[in-house]
Image 1: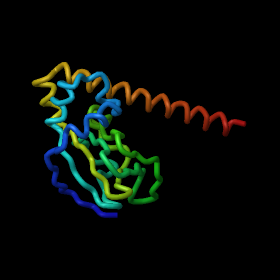
Image 2 (image 1 turned 90 degrees about the vertical axis):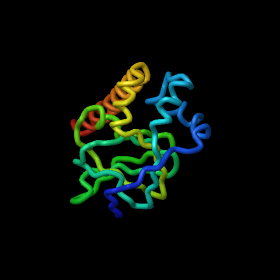
Image 3 (image 1 turned 180 degrees about the vertical axis):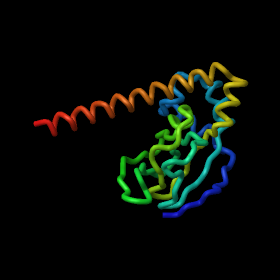
Length: 167
């Protein structure tokens, strides 16, 4: 595993090429094209090599990530007994609930293969709050909906697990 604490974020280029993908990303749901451009101008991009760590479980959140290309694996307790939780591919968003909840990351993430991500920093998100409150509100609502969907899915898995072990 490669650990690079200081990744260089670059400007997002070819923005028009990303618009079709943004329609598929749940946190951008319901945003008009002009509103999407207000978000896009705040996004950066970053590249990760195969097996490069993106963030570590317990780190303080600083960014919301969206996979442009490649794959990202979620891993619990990466230093002691790694347990893979799942993988995200193009269009997937992660890190958003930690940023909004102001809680440390509950998992580590690493690039499974060469991966390019879009990044919305906490500072860029707060600039939307100050300058584009309607866009900010829609993003927060969408993040809350996505967190609720994930929690519902987790509840179903837990109930299924409990049911299977009670018999």
